[in-house]
Image (cartoon, rainbow, N blue to C red; front, side, top):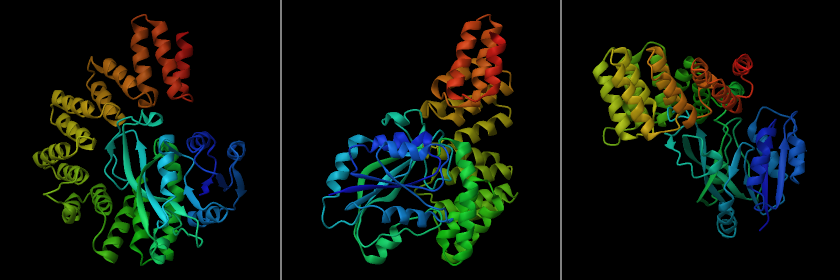
Length: 434
């Protein structure tokens, strides 16, 4: 069976080579559809032997995807993005899967890597990353989901959706069999937070446009909610959540979480608790729901209830780190700095590389002028070198300078420049110390 790779790209020079290396030897054809790159993406794709075609952006990811599929000549098509990778050890599983005659497509796992377990906007509770896949070893967590990515090239398969495009409706319409395949697509697009946020503005506009075109479809309103949630556009989040529920009644957990968060941010925490009630399952508690309840209780001044909800969330899933940070802040606000610290240390015992936990611990020590702040910052650098935005490195370097260890201070700053090569403050501090 001939296997084609289908990809759409724009300005992915930093990622594309790693992606194409990860599928080398698996695919027989690479089809790369470029939507206007200016950074060398096209040249990299051609260097890997890809067939590169240009496509004028239309404001629809589905249209771009469908064009890329139409250019594939293989019996099967594997869809992957430039900021994703495969583990080459799983090539054989894919090759075996496409030899099964009765199957038309496969859903694969997609692991969305992040540097903290404190997020809920990705649609699933995050999981602690074991570090088994070396390129993702520094990432503390991932959010898993299933994606239909491996499809038979028959009868012109089509995506739908301007944003969050998907193939499932086309397969359901034709009654085609879709199986699951225990293969992981490793997605790194959520790690660069600033770049990801820049994309969210575009995605939100596309989602809004699609909602105007399909006002009776709850799915498109869910897409608007998800993009607005990333941008903390609370009025849009709440409106989308309410519209979804009005159209369908039952809704995914993310819709309730988003609506509740928007209500809290709007100064309506009591209503937030009501919004969470339909998914507040006492028999099988959800850690993100419990943490959101804790935030609502805290806003209402119900401190003990907030503490209890945090503790239950932590017990339910120690890998979900938001309640550690929340409980630490509650304890600190109550004048109990030592127990606030112990809570963060407990979270770090479970989630050693979590950047937000380290930021909270260093921030707590710094706030109270605790003598342990330098030690905390140094441990943070070692565990999560991409965290702190350079502040941890400069803090440690400043202390070393004060101790007369100039060479060691410069060495720490050089470590910081490896993680943050464009940080002008680190550069300036290094020059001053020379």
